[in-house]
Amino acid sequence: MNGVLKYKENFFLRYKKEIALTLGAVMTFSAVIRYTPSDVTQSGVAQARNSNNQSVEEQLVASGYSVSINGVELGIVKNKDEGQAATNQALEMVIADLGYNPEVEPALTYEAYYSDEENYMAPEVLATLIASQVIDQLDRHKVMAYVIKIGDDFTVAVKNEEDIKKVLLKAQSIYVNTDMALDISLAKNEHNGLIIKPQVVMIKEDESSQSRTFTTSTTEEVPETTEGAPIETPKDVTKDGVTVEVNFAESVMAVEAYVFEDEILSVDEATALITKENEKAKLYTVVSGDAPSTIAASNSMPLAQLYELNPGLEQNTLKMKIGDELVVMVPEPELSIATKEEVVYTESIIRGVSYVDNPDVFKGSDSVVDAGYDGVLQLTALVSKVNGKEIAREITNQTILNEAKDKVISRGTKPLPRKGATGSYKYPLTSFKITSTFGRRWGAFHSGVDLSAPTGTTVRASDGGTVTVAGWRGNYGYLVEIDHGNGIRTRYGHNSKIDVKIGQKVAQYETIAKVGSTGRSTGPHVHFEILFDGVAANPMNYLEY
Image 1 (tube, rainbow, N blue to C red):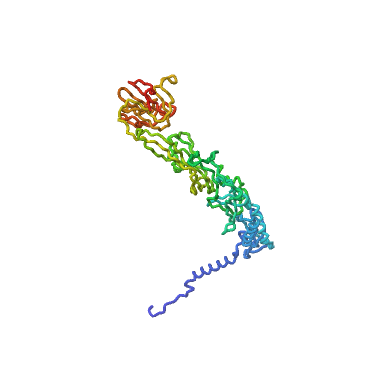
Image 2 (cartoon, one colour):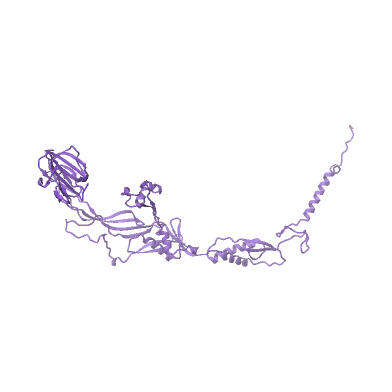
């Protein structure tokens, strides 16, 4: 077939099958498009024929929407945009009517409406109906009141400005010690006129008609005396203070606002809520094995705070017993009151001690020549308190009302005799009162003499010798016994302290103990005995000054 032209098949004949299928598909698609409505109606599936004998080719169009709220039909609107516009207008009307935003969102429901009549509701009418429904459905209504804010997050609502004053006055009156009239001023905040800043105002009377006085805690006044004479006055007498400044310790403000009516409190209710005056302290009952430190730890509090809440506990820890109740928490008030008080009080100027040497008296034989007296110092101080608790004190003035006079003691400087018996017996006390003598007493035999003196008075050796007893001896209490040789011994009973040891050599007049009331005793004294070969003799027959 070289040189002969190749036969070329016709395009349409070659692809006739594919072209026929393509034309069939296009015709089918056109038929579908033609007989499908262009806008699906809101009422559901279009039927081939409706009541007006309209074909499926004719579009079905809703003429508007029926609007309802809470199941109540309100009217017809053209479209949903009109319904939303009416809703927005209704909310503005509700806020204008109530005076506050109830923070509700009306939930409208729409149903397609078909009619040839254009019976549409005016938007403002629909808005009025929606507003009425919203207000009718509110469970609670707000009213205008005043909200007091204390600190960062505590708030309480009261009826009016007068109640603000009453609440704050009652809250501070618990902690303020003053006869001066107080008031609460309600000034507008300089940066925001809607905010009220309450402040405590002290109303001062005309100073020309007011005399300032101080009264002591006792009924006796400090007497006027001649120079050098003692003033009899109690130690650390604190006189009533005068409050010179009162403030709120926290930030306090108030604002007028709408609140639910049942949230508005009376003056008493608001005061109790702020001061916590009706709340009780939390108590802890002591159980076996408890100690203050473990109680504090189990209640997540510092030990110092536990002691502060329970005065006397630190000093009487050993007396704490099972079943005791301790305070571990005291309700803290929402509002703290800071005050400054000017107080005038007296303190004792403790007398000094001066000594006069007496070479004619043995060492250790001291005696009081002049008791002297304490002086009196008057102080004026500015005391800062928060809720009645002192946090600082500044002394602003002090005046000596009476100078102290030193106590004068005659001090013996004469050397003690040799550490041995002299054969003479001195009274073991330099100053005393005989309260019981040697012989029969209360149906029994009293083997010594009782010399009464204040606890702590120096007890001296009646004569020199060797200490044979220095310790506790039953009814004697703390006892010292000295052997003077030749079968002679002396005893010194009921001491509060012993200053010698067994085997120690002591001289006449040497300090051996301090007066007390240990053992079988009814008061501080020295029970003194003198024994010859173990037999008690009447000390008064041998003692000399």
